[in-house]
Length: 125
Image 1 (cartoon, one colour):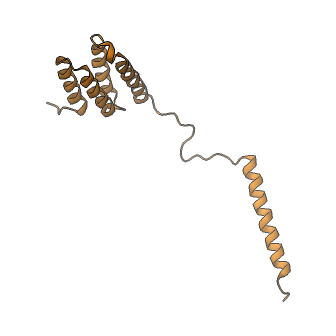
Image 2: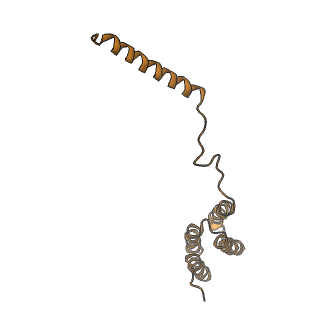
Image 3: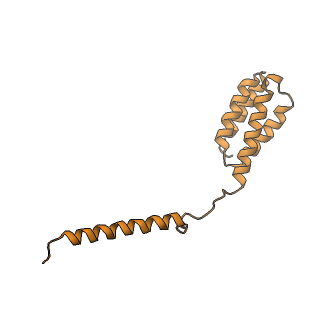
């Protein structure tokens, strides 16, 4: 028998609260379950299934919060199943822009001028 996960424990607590008529407390447990399940598609699906069933009996007072939770769960699921989008690999560097090249040129010019001034002021050997 597998060990009960944090999500499973929270869903069990939420179910117990629902049986007692404590929908607000059940929603609180579902939010904690959501936080524990992020980036885990199977766990997120369990919460989505539970939430879908809960939606059938939710009182108007909790309907908005349940809809907010459902929206967060959909976003979490999308992030869990889709790889993150990166524009470049971390080892890849972008070529210098025109502004960067101009700044490098100006720094080089200033260095050359400073060297020329220093050489012109040094005593002749």
